[in-house]
Length: 139
Image (cartoon, one colour):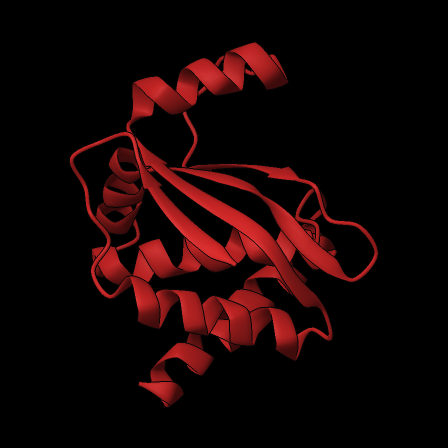
């Protein structure tokens, strides 16, 4: 089950479409969907989590806490809407496209993909692109 929570004024459009897409992403990776919570927030909220839990004094667009066990994908994914908007501007892409990329990025971590090395990051980007196409094909 996917739930969307809001700690900011932002509201996700088409929650059902996004939820169904994320579930299909999980299935496409031969995993089962457990409980995944997306928490949308601002920079200040996510910065506080980054400092308190990860000891990183930086801004970021996403922090995920992975509670997956075996093939069961579950966890909490915090997303800074401010960072997503800034990144969309920096990368010259639509906000909704960047938001989808961030949403699927967190799920891909839960599916076992990493992005610490250059080679891992390349694989992660390719997987993000593949999963983003699943959204466009379906809708």
